[in-house]
Structure formats: C-alpha cells, structure tokens
Image (cartoon, rainbow, N blue to C red; front, side):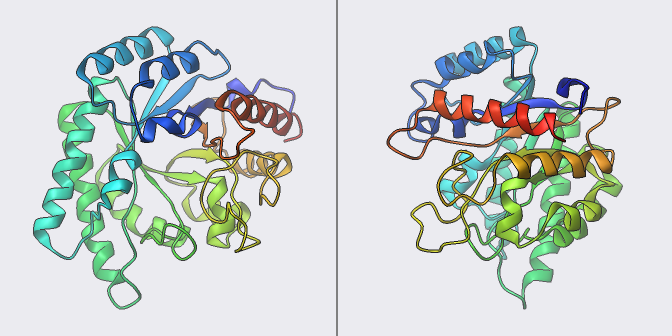
Length: 305
C-alpha cells in the first residue's frame, strides 16, 4: 500500500494500557498523556477517567491543543467495579446506568468525540436472550443521554465469552444482533472490533467483519496469548507484538488492514480510529519500548497491506 496510512485511518493509542500504572494511581495521568500528545505519530488517543478536577482541566487543554481525536473508554471504571449493565435486578441496572452517565459527563469535559462501552458477564444459554434485551435498553439509554448533551458517538467493544472476560457480547453475530435495534434508532452508535480478540473468540476477521461492516466502526489492534493455557500471559492481557508465545504479530495486523480495506472500512472519505491497545508486562519492558515496538509494527504492516 503506497498511500499514506493517515489518509485511511486515525492512528490512536490507548493511554491507560500503554501506561498501566494509571490503573493504580492517576499521579502521572497528565504527564503520560502529554507524552502521547507530543508524539505526532498518533492522531488519536483513548483515555480513561481522570478523577482529579485540576488534572482533568489540564488534560482537556492538552487534548484541545494537540488536535487529536479523543475517545473515552469506560473499562477502567466498569471492570474493577464489575459493572453489569444487563443485570437482572432493575435496581442494579439503574445504578450502573447512573455510573456510566457520569462517565459520559466526564468524557464531554475532556473533549471526547467517542465513548467506549462493553457488556457485562454472560449469564449462560438460558438467560442470554433476556440479558440481550436489557443490554439493548441500556445502550439505547446511553445513546439518548449522549445525544441530549452533545454529539459524541457510542461504540460497543466486542470481547470474548469463554476464555478471559466471559462477556455477553460475546461473538460478532451477537454484537450484530444487539447493535441493530440501537443503530436503527440512534445515529450515534457503532461497534469496536479488536484484532486481539479474534483468537479469543475463535473467529477470523474474514469471517466476522462482514457480519458488522454496515455499522459505524472503529478498530483496535493488539496481541494476546491463547495457544498455551499454561502460559503466564494466557488470555486477554494485551502483550506487545512479538512476545514469546503470542498469537498475533505484524503479518496479522497487515492482514487485518487488508480485510478492512476490502470492505471499505479503512477509507479516505471517513477514516476511522484504529487504536493500538498494548502494554508492558515483562520486567525488561517499558512503556516507551512497547510503544516504539507498536509503531514499527504498524508501519511495516501497512507497507505490506
């Protein structure tokens, strides 16, 4: 592919994964965000919550000056709290909805244009249909609330069901099923497809992307370990590309780009956000090394797409 990659996508980095210390402490939130914003390789960034009012103001100004596309992810809030937006207790669903609405408010304060959500734990075959109905109601309410306060777009991230996260959504067919009624009603809704989740789902981009290609789409790239259950990085941990025992590397990223180009999902008319979700996990790894690794993989993968 000879054309510049920037004509076809907005290259992003997931802030709280590249700097995993943010999951324990927000002390370096502003400094690490500034590092990303000062690196013009990235034209987008995905951030998590910033609870300190002063830091949040500074972060919003950094993002304003940077001219980057900004996404806000709810995982740093939802995962530690084990939030389940399709819980069978109405009171719990209401509580979760209130928490995520506060995340929407914070995302607007930080200048985000996109907002990531996910489902909760899969309840099993017998209750799955009911859980999907509750989840459709939840996503619709979040889209409605978002539209009332601005023009941010909601994207549902597709996780795995039975290896690591154990989430309702699930598989790409399930994602398409719950997305359709929401997308039919709300123009500010779409899906997020993550390359690193295909091995966990036992699906391939060639099989899965056609099921969802008609929705508004954003994308993640990353790695995982699934072949060896005894591997200390087994599951959905977003290791660097090239990690020993890893399931994905440069050729897989290149193939992903090819599939997305084939279906017109990477395009010059409306370039989507494609973010790298990687993190340092081994003693010899630093955030800077893993980020540099990722940039090299992206450049080489695009050159052969």
